[in-house]
Image (cartoon, rainbow, N blue to C red; front, side):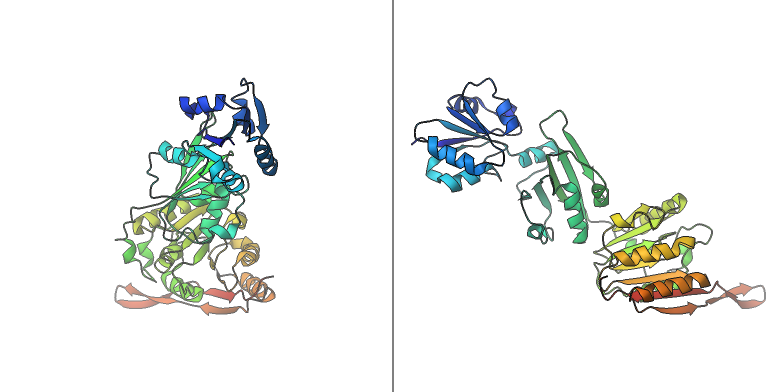
Length: 411
């Protein structure tokens, strides 16, 4: 009985050595994928194409292995998440001889000049999602073989849902072809919004350089308004900010928090002093204020705030499910924004809404009540001392209503 020869062809037939080519030319029966067999179209031997017919492949091999030289072409390296492992299991180690080649994942690491000896490898072909749900914690580097349904977008979504902060992602599309493309992403939210060519490979790398937190350690709840870059006093005032953060009731350091109508980003910045391992999404429509948010992020060196420009409530569907939501701006769209935000809020999540309009107070309170959030509201009137030429006086700030509720069940 002649052993079945399984030949790895690397990324393409260009990776074959003279030894590999000699083995292939001895074949009486050549088995491989469509593209692999095309590379040997001029070889006048019997060929069998691999499709969704692995049972037939095994039966054909078993039927012909007594008298025929059988060669199976495998993409990458046959025993690295490849058909070689399957055939060894089905026809026995003693009946197989493997001729390795470079795997696609190892090729991917070489493309970006990264070592792979310390990486964790994973194939998503036919895997259930729960199989990777706990993989990302504590590990620094991954090489991932995707499939057509579980691609880079799917992986990014899983990481965001796990609230794993600090991964950058490299997507390598159609390696070894003229369409080869390599793209790095530092914000995984951008990956969710990108379409990729298949096949592709994902490399995840945890950012190893820790952020400089010397400025972020200065962050405290209720900082003076002058601490922030803001537009003409358009900022959630210091005292109101303190009340809002208390009503958000952050109980862990890895919450996922939406700051909607973020303005200067002051609430997000102060929240980051509590949410040190979670993610914060600051959403603002005004491009000038977006710039101010980014300036404040740079000033305080906050590593976990993602800034999104969007006119609410559009864009919320694409964002990961939040544990906490603050709506500090919304104007005439506040009712629509509140409805949409509540529909996305996680079970037991808390939403806090600020408004200065009586009409919005009534509508927001009613929406929360209808949705079963058991809302509460307070009216806050702040007066602050102000120096005068011959003494001090009190100056009143605009009164504001703060409404909050907790989602205790799913609709």
